[in-house]
Length: 390
Image (cartoon, rainbow, N blue to C red):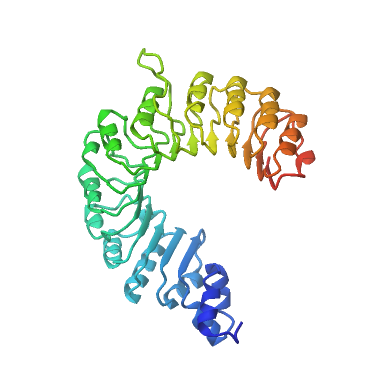
């Protein structure tokens, strides 16, 4: 490789991980060392402090992506290095941001004039002043587990090019003023585990997101009626996640039927909720093009699963673990679903014979999850599946 032109070596280097580049830089070859300094992505997982890794960071010329997971106050050091070297990053991902000094983070964000993607986890020290210095042309923004009030969050509407916003675990995000927020270009919205109650103001907000394709409301307690309103308000959505959300409180009214077909939706997650066979039949009738359906640990029985197999014959990923299902479901999956890539039947009483039958009828199956299936011996299933989770 040392005989190749420097620009070719640089291109090769950028297919390697930070760990691999770190080793190459210790080979005492000037040309290789110089090429390594042009690495575009610095990705560190500092579960344990490693002084050698940290010291080498300042040697890179102009990386585009900085991803730091775990670690402690070393994140402050990375901010200082970036400021000193005048790095203009396009992507920054920091988790456990509570260890980063507020003033250091302010200067760091202020210096990033080319930033397109910012993900900060556990960013409890952030204030509105930090939001004001973030590049206004940013496209993806995640500020998970924050302490922002509405007046702070409202400032986000200044980011006109925002296509992805994640405010999950926001401790003070309520419905009160949310209808005042407008994001004309937003396609992906994550509001998991917030204080939202999904009242009329929330749906006004949702209705204004005309380009929305993906919505995550995991752990936001709601009802099947509200699910019905999401269907009515977001007819063009492609991905919806409501893990542990639908608690089936109907306010003394019967659960309504969905009014609009979700022709574009290809990924729906309703796990750990109280939906039953009637609900899943209603849903299945309105998601004709679904590719992935997750109903793990619900009230769905063989009746609901059989209906899924009869209607959604092109489904590729099906998650039905910890439900009251039997070999009746497994037999119908084997007969009618022949395009499965991934299947989860964990914590069920399905037996070896029908598990093998499913594998034989799905030549492309890559992942089969059979955790705590007392009637299945995983050893006889090892052929025909790339990965078995037991």
